[in-house]
Image (cartoon, rainbow, N blue to C red; front, side, top):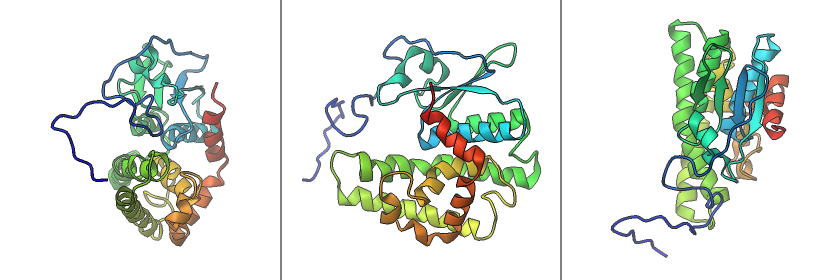
Length: 260
């Protein structure tokens, strides 16, 4: 049935679909809830989503290099609305995971948005990001490519293919086409370079892999890998498999699942 939009949109709380009980058109907290704080200098509030595991992968890679990146990970259950608790909105006014509190200095520092957290930690520990020059610019370009592109995969393709209350041909085709275009961008890039930003492993890889690497490996959105024929992107798939074999990546995936 064709949709006719009203003159002014109003919020229908019963619109169905996954996360319908927590999504809302206003910001700010819905309830008071103090966040837990552990003994480590870094406090991470996260979940096992693609955005959530980016940061734990980086933290585990830093620890694997014997850098002092000790952290405590705490689960924010977005299905239950934990992201709208007052303690969490104090760290991230946008109510999205992950969020980080760095308590290693004289004054705690909040950091929100996954790309910003990756950049903050890479600069703090001097690792996985070139210090300057064209190499740094290239890495940052690909980091922000992910930030701008992945919403078409998650909020677009993933939502209409998996989470929407009904399946409709137009949005699935629209976002499947865009997702495949992005997969082709990465496949072409990785056909010329060992890693996303060039010859070295950087935070650009850590940002992109949880979305596109795991999609290529058919680890997210059910049978979406088969539906999108991700095996045909052989350079992307080879890169995805190499990163999946890294012990820090494996631990980075498991930590949010086991978060307290």
